[in-house]
Image (cartoon, rainbow, N blue to C red; front, side):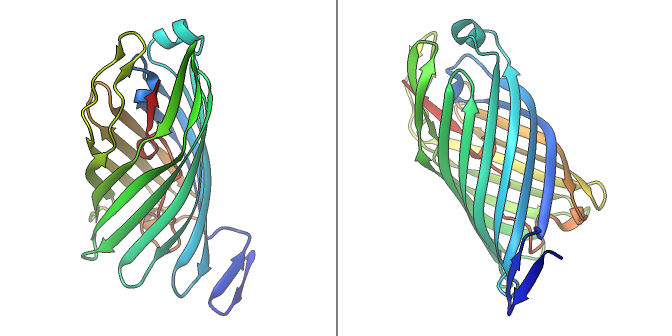
Length: 277
């Protein structure tokens, strides 16, 4: 089985949970300097190992690759960059307790090759409470850890993960579809545009988003996620959707079974990026 027990504590090489995602990805953020949006594809793998059977404590590890192309020609004309390649990686702890409390804490790292190369880091946390057998209420947040500097053509820029806090409602429907909807607040975004300069920022911004998981059979599910930070013209519009393959089956209860990681592998919806000059 690839693992052995010592009391309730498990030591294993093979994961207790494993998924593979492939799908479409689209993103527009302040880091696009007001003149671009990118569209492309995403691949990711996410695995989890249970550390303690009795308490449900586990840890997760995942990574991904996004390959996107410019939606407009301006960035290519100004910087020579036609594509954006992103590698998000996530490591964390989680626990799905018998008392109805679920929590997770994760660290995300992003390596990005766009108009320059950047390495960024952030923390994510999630705390949820089961209100009924099918309804959860909770909060998730993202906190920047480190920024990076580079150049947009000849213009020096600084990229920083966006701090945000969101309150969510998750429901398991009779069809086994799971939906999660949230609203919250994000830190002030810099309304910058490479062609028109800096515009006035309006302080903390409203956030809204959604996530859904729709099983097709025991091994496959449609999964999607979107997060949107106002204002629409200069904020973030990040979304992706595709198919998840569950190695070993279990797609029908994958979002909430005990060995499932609380956090997905990071992606633009939950790792938004601000730009400053």
